[in-house]
Image (tube, rainbow, N blue to C red; front, top):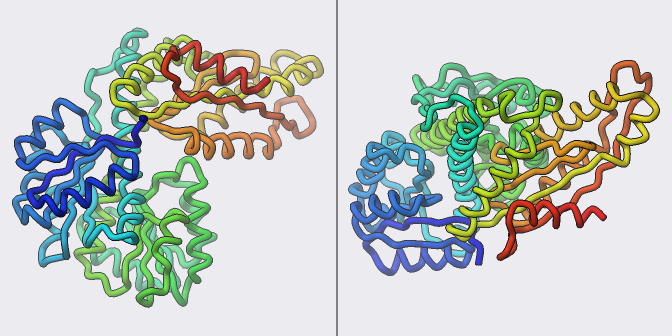
Length: 449
């Protein structure tokens, strides 16, 4: 059975660890329980976990010290969640100093379980992205690209840009006060519509929005949806502050795309922790993006489309298949084709115009898939995409986004004096027991017939 993630759980209270382990197992995760910090270290070195959960509720402050030690022992970017029974003085500042990625306070009852898993999923995707950048660099080196074995993904403790969205500039002052020296710049925008445009135009590390009187809950949730449906902003941390306790339905907000909902009365240390920690996570993604872009050279990508060459994707897919089997992870392959539109377009407007249309389609597909997905142009208007750690039901979101936007877009091609529309055919294949790279691609192509 394929898993969503492999998780280490560190704790000493069997009742608590059993509850957490059951929740994670029921959510299709593999869980290894470690009672000592040394066990966590040995397991982490050997099993490459997607996530480490430390039960501070049973360990106390030594659990936070374990998180610090793991960061110092070359596990800088393995996501770590601190689980506490209840908040205590100094918790959030200590968690921030330990570089813990998230803090979950409370029991794993039905409501808490849903929120916990929703908050863990972006962390497990970060683990996927970290694995992908290492995999991509290793393969690029085999293709003769001079890259270091271990990319520098380090980030500092200061956020570059944070966007505060709300009905009053007081929110900007509050965020600036909470972050203090941990942010170079806090921008303010009163209305969601203008805030969305600013996000589309620049790189921000986090967004915090106040929902209540100035911005209605409905508008706040719509804003969350718009941000999450934008591929470049898919992982952007988005915190909502509810002006009145209970005014924002937490579950609905998180399903809409909010990273977290905070009460308006939340202290500065809590706001500072979540903005700084989630923002740091986003900075790591920017570093991963840059490292992945460095693998795209004349040795690995097509001269015209700038997508990867077919040989690169086949080699990459072979590595993905091996790792998916070793770690019992999901893997999906997609094939998109615009050949039905490209063939008559080439006959009417010539080869150069067809090449330009293909280049634009390639650019759109690359921009609409996720950071960890690999896109290769197989010629003839066909593009193959590998989606690591992705079951088909999650791949459907990528399929819908790519096909919907491509078919909605009016392409502008030089010397073609009318808008150009394309029809997209798509096929898919999930990893089967006997698959190799060629078999997966072939089955995905068959879906289009």
